[in-house]
Image 1: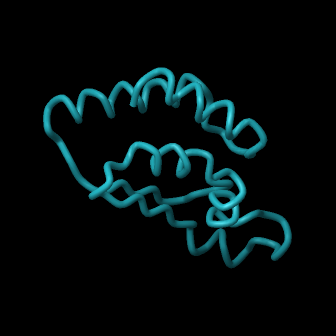
Image 2: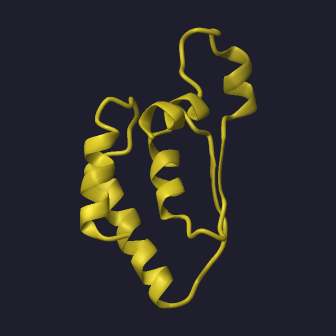
Length: 96
């Protein structure tokens, strides 16, 4: 992922809660570029999604023939108060 795409992501997800900071996004983008250059392909999977900030970034990194599959931790999901956290799907719909 190029620097401009990282900046776009950071601008568009400014209101999404979470702990995926700009330095994290830039480091993920560097690894993504290395993997693309080396021909490394595959689906992206995140376990333990909180508000979805990292999941949104991973979905942007996925190539058209790759999937990004974020998953909440089952134990966290059971403990969560029904109205306290927006689902990742809702965040994706609102952001894009």
